[in-house]
Image (cartoon, rainbow, N blue to C red; front, side, top):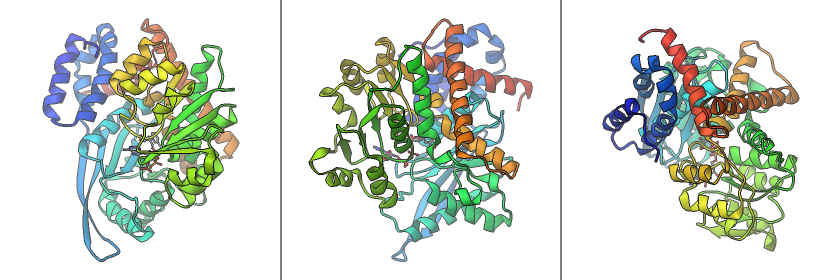
Length: 453
Ligand code: NDP
C-alpha cells in the first residue's frame, strides 16, 4: 500500500472510524486518497475547505423495507438502499444492484466510485448508487415484478429527472427497468422518461445503452494499446462474467479482430479455444436465463467447463494478452495478477467496478502492464445513459451509428483526460492516478463554487 499524504491520512482514519465494517467502501476511498497527495500539495484550497471530508459523506442515504409476496403466498422482506452521494455536477446518477451480497457498504463504495466516474465523462451528472439484497436468480417473472413494484413504491419519492436518475447494474437489466418505470409512472401519473435509463427502445430507451459498458471498455483498451503501437488484432483475451458488460465486451473484441477464449459466471468457467460463440452464449444467458455450464455442454467436446474455478487460471496454460474483468468487485487478486503477468498480459481494463484488489493493481503497475480502473474503463455505460437523458429531454431518438460514435468519442475523451493528467503530475501511463485526479478536480471545483453546502 502507498503512504497517504499527511493531510489525507487523518481524514482516512476518520472515514474508517465513522463507517465501521464497510470494507469495500474503505478500499474505494483509500484508492482515491492514494492518488490525491500531489493535488493537495499543489492546491491547498481543497484541503482548507474540507472538500475531501465532504466528498466522503453522502449527501443523503435512504434505507427502506421492501415487503413482497412470493408465489407460495409467503411474505418476503428485503432491504432497499439509495445513496445519493454527490450532486455537484448534475442530478444523482448511478445504477441499482439486486444481489444477495448487497449491504450499505457495497452501495456506498459503488456510489463513491460513481462520483469520479461521472465527473470523468465530462457530462452533467452527479454520483449515486442503489440496490437491494434481493436475488432475482430462480425467481419467477411475477415475483421479480412484484419485488420491483414494491421497491419503487418507496423509492419513487426520492427520484426525478432533475433529482436522481437510476439505471441497471448486477441483477437489474431491461426487464427490471421496465417494471420499475411502470410503477413510477403509475404512482406519479407522469410519463417522465428521463427518470430512469436503460429503458426499452420502444418506450424512451437509447440504442447502444445495452452494449455501451462492454463496448466502452473495449474502446478504452484499444486506446491504451494504441499508445504502445498495438491493436486487438490477433490478441487472446479473457473476459470474466457473462452478463451485460461481459457479453458486449466479447462482441466488440471479436469485431476488432481479437479472440475471447474464456468467460465465467459465479458457478464456473468456460474455456473455448476457438473463441466464445456469442450467439450461443446469448441464447443460453439472455433467452433461457441459464448457466454457462450449458454453453459448454452444447459445444460438445470443443469447450471445457470448470465448475467452481477462477477464470484467470486459464493463463497458467495459455498466452493471455488482454484481461477484462467484467463480473464483480475483488474478483482478481494478487495471485491472479501474477499468473496473468507470467502469461505475458499487456493490458487489463476493468469492465466491472473495483474487480482488482489493491495488490493486483500494484503488481500490474510494477510490471508496466497497461491498467485501466473501472471508473475510467467502464464509464461508457453511464455516458450512454446521459445520452439517453439527452434524447428524452429533446423527445428525439438517435441512430445506432450516431450513438455509438458519440460513445466512442466520449471514451477517447476519457482516455485523453486520464493520460494527460497522469503526464501533468509526472506519472505517464498511470491511468489510476489520471482518473482519480481529473475526476476529483472537476467535482471539487464545482463544490468550491457552491460554498459550504
Ligand atoms: P449482470 O448481472 O448482467 O452480470 C454479472 C455477471 O457477473 C454474471 O455473469 C454473474 O454471474 C457474475 N457475478 C456477479 N456476482 C458475482 C460474484 N459474486 N462472483 C462471481 N461472479 C459474479 O451485471 P453487469 O454485467 O451489469 O455488471 C457487471 C459489473 O459491471 C458490475 O461490477 C457492475 O457494477 C459493473 N458495471 C455495470 C454497468 C452496466 O451498465 N451494466 C456500468 C458500469 C459498471 P451469475 O449470473 O452467476 O451471478
